[in-house]
Length: 218
Picture (spheres, rainbow, N blue to C red):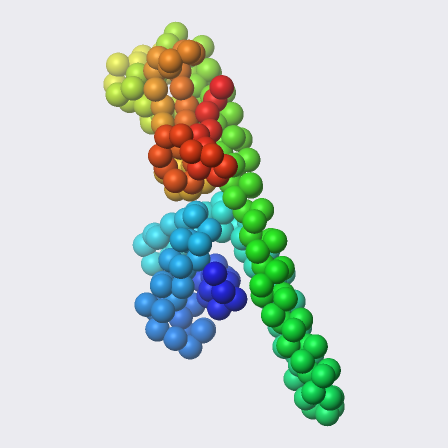
């Protein structure tokens, strides 16, 4: 990850699209797309959902944007200080101090901010699973059973063809993806409980540790 990746990310976030961001940055769209892919790979989370004529930021992008703006603002201030120092004829030692500050901000402050992104994604997944679990319980109260594996979580927003007691929708919006852009895994019955609701974490595979660990409803 480098600072240029962050500048490109902020431009895409604020422009709501790669084409407009590339014009504002004075580069071609393929360069912008490559920078965003690099950043997504470094963080291990998707940052934008590609939609018709625009992109929509993910929950991870919203969190990253707040931190990225602070880092870039600090870097811009350091660069302005460097230019002022040059204009005032500061000594070489004073100029070197400002250069070191810029390097520290890029290499130390940014990782500290971005290290929190993964933790927030886990918290978001837990909150989404809790909301889905409550919606499934309400579905069961109305219909007398949980949705089958065949209809899955879609039954929370659309009436299954064989469910006359359905009284939804049970979610205000569509069924969410997990914070890493993957569908939640729904199994009924579960191994120990009436149902299982899982995110396989950042890597999208069962097992793992840290941000790659499975997150479930029990």
